[in-house]
Amino acid sequence: MGLLRGMARTAVVAGTATAVSNRVSRRQANRWANQEAQSAPQEYYSDPAPAPQAPAGTDTNTKLAQLRELGQLHDSGVLDDAEFELQKSRILNS
Image 1 (cartoon, rainbow, N blue to C red):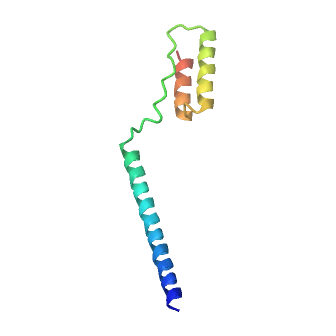
Image 2: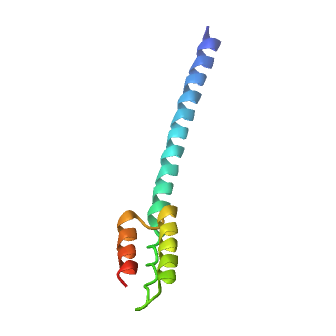
Image 3: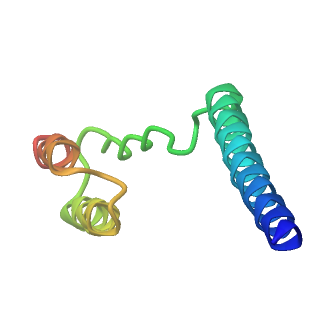
């Protein structure tokens, strides 16, 4: 009976040690990940470049080309709805 008890005790101690070790490793990994995220530059997305402003007296073909390009930027997600409307009104009112 003493041998079985000793093996059981060893298994419990080893299991507990493994669980604690894993928890500490995960906690340290999370801390390091948070530190790296905070210290890393946050420039994943830059501000979209403003749509080219049409010079005074542009012809219709130039405006249509600019509107097409603006629509492509909007469809691809570079411009949100508000930016799209602002740039569209600038092109149309030039």
